[in-house]
Length: 76
Image 1 (tube, helix red, strand yellow):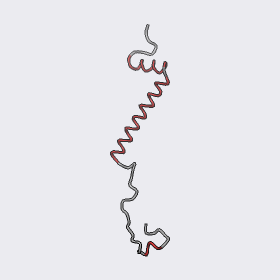
Image 2 (cartoon, one colour):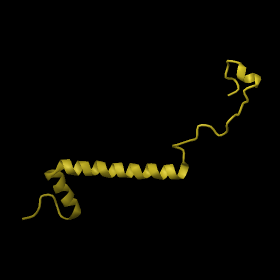
Image 3 (cartoon, helix red, strand yellow):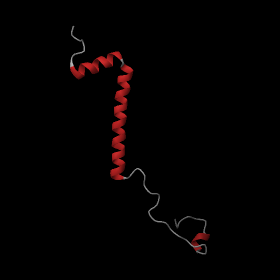
């Protein structure tokens, strides 16, 4: 008796989708998540743009500097 789903890997996947759709759907989502994760890690290692530094340079101001006594922050 021939299988109604066909032969080979495609028939096996069709039969699995019919008999255990929860496992097959979860497997598809897991493979998509794995692909997105690998792509994200690859982009992070190549570009390093996901974690930029807050400031490239810092300003050191002495306490007796007249700019410090002003309440505005125009020197930042």
